Structures are given as structure tokens and as C-alpha cells.
Length: 310
Image (cartoon, rainbow, N blue to C red; front, side, top):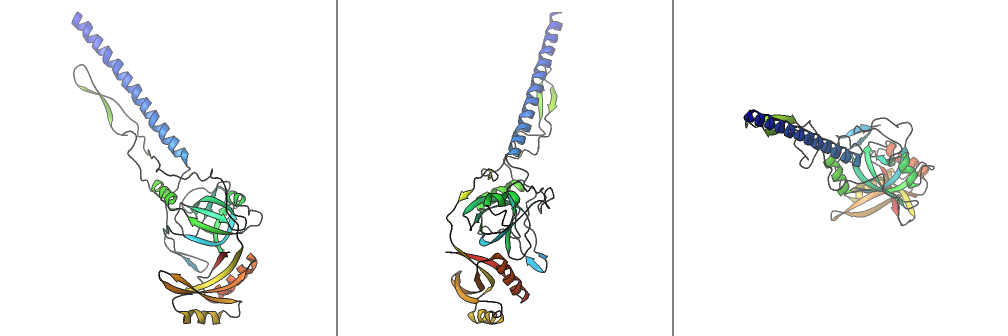
């Protein structure tokens, strides 16, 4: 009888131990899922990481690339109501009230600093869409980003766009699924030895994937404050091209002479001089748009607007 009671006690203990392990497993599962949710809430969905192949819009070719040295000036525009709630180029949903932007060639997503050269306001922005495709526009800001940069009312602004390499690489790592070791193995069953020394499978942890801790440096873009940079005077030009030989640049100058004031100037590139051909300077966005259209019509499809600061 005592042996039978002992066996019952042992079985009761085994059941109690099993229940405790089950509860612990559930608690660990909840911890894993809560951690994953918390990490996911650190930044909104990154969509699909995308560079993309060359593409053509309105007769102009664009060549996307991972250009970690990107630093350009040009004219920014903004977009909002007509695209709000629609998918972006990398599969996210566009929200005009979030700080984001569209760019023709930079990776999606990537992070840039955009500085309004007209008022000195500067903002870190996440790029998740393609555009703008109006000639002469370098970047298309969300409505909220345009408000923060102070040009929603004007519609356009002269800006400098600088890629932030470290932050962009962090977003790439997150969007492509690079991760640290998981917090718990999702398929490893918990085993408990019974009184008879036979393994008893209590419960397998539910699949907690994807447990995707974020890279060390994820930019908190929406909460970034607007910084104030020094304001300088600016001049706008239309650049028809840059040429290795001055004679070629002079021939282009002659072809464009009827359009406006043409300037040929040398600039050092990788240890040698290149000769830029520019039309300008002008101070009005509408005028620079007109000049750009004339230069493109003359056969220089790669012409673009540039802004010089003094």
C-alpha cells in the first residue's frame, strides 16, 4: 500500500512539475512575442529593400544605385492627398502625415538629411518611394516633411540632399532580414523526465518567428527635431553636362547660345578637370524650369538643375 501511495505521490509531483513547466513555457512564449512586438513598434514596417533596375519615365532614363556618397542640391517639391493611403515603390503605405520622401535613384528605404537652403531648416527624412518625375525636381517630400521644412505654402524649395550612410545601412539590414540570434528557439520542444525516466513532451513553443531585433542604430526619424542651419544666398543653374575635353564643352555652349547665358567652367574630378556647361544664373524657380525644358528639348536629356550657395 505504501508503495502505491508513493507512486501516486510521485505521479502527482510529476503532473505538478509538468504544469509548472507548461506555465513557464507559456510565459516565455509571451515574453518572446511581447519582445518582438516591442521591437517591431520601434519603427514602422520597412517594406521591401529595393534598389531596382534602370527605368524610363517620359523619355528620361534613371539609374538607381547604392550611392553612399550622395550629396546634391536641387529643387524639392511635396506630395500628399492624391497619394495618401496608396502603396509606395517598396510596398509600404504612403502616409502624408509621416516624415518621408520620394527619390528617383537612392535605395528604398534609405535615410537622407534635407536642408531647405531658403530658410536653413534641416530634417532627417526616410525615403520609401520613387519620384518626383517633373524635370528639375530632386526630391518629393511628404506633406508633413514639407510643413516642417517650411515650404508647404510655396510648393517648392531649394534644398541640399545628403545621404546618411550609417542610418541607411541599418535600414537595409533590417529590411533584408539580417538579425541577431533569436531570443528563443521556436521549434525546440521542452522535455521533462517522468518518474519512470521516460521523456515526456510537455509542449512545443509556438513559432515565435520572426523575432527580428533591430540593428544597433535605427534612426527615429519621425521624432527628429528640425535643426536650424546657416542661411546663404543661392543661385540656380541648368547644367547641360560635364565634359572631359574643353572643345566638346565649347561646342555645346555654341549649340545652346540662343537659350540664355552659357558658362563653361572647369571643375576637378578624380584628379583631372571636367568642363561643366551651365545656363544661368537665375533666381526664380519658374525661370529655371523653363530653361531646363529648353535644354532638354535641345537634346540634352541628362540636364538638371543645380544650386550654388555663397
